[in-house]
Image (cartoon, rainbow, N blue to C red; front, side, top):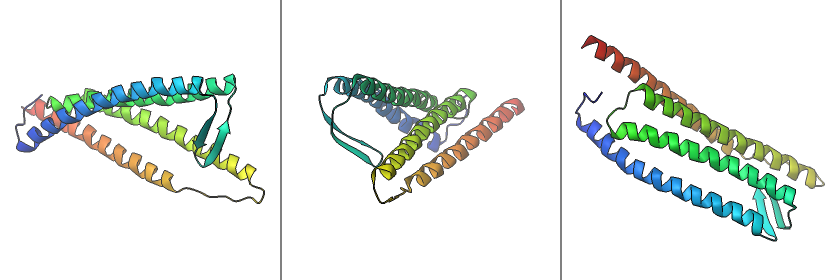
Length: 179
């Protein structure tokens, strides 16, 4: 329901249209990158790989390694495309002026869930590379990257914003019933 006509709502609608176009472009860039990445994985002879803090140079991959690496990359890109799709649907609702509705909140929740899965995969690769580098060095040297803390703070903030959208939706429904 587009009842409010405040100047801030008009600005949100306009900015949401721009963001929607940017997300559409990002979707096609990620699709193209996904296809090119898979082509590189299956056609490259030797390559340099860095996973977390583990570095592999001039590595020749077997077909099983290529397939498993392609599967991992495909899972990441599939989740990224789902995240972008849900975020685009959320922004499309904002562009239409429907900021506090159940559909927008559902898309926000799904986008946040996909982001959490991607972040979980990132943490698993970080842990795996940490274990690999700890096993490779003769005197055990352990270095920990604290960037994961910023990720936790980011997702905490996103959940607070999601709860604010849910409260706004409830208040919007109550105001509709009152009118």
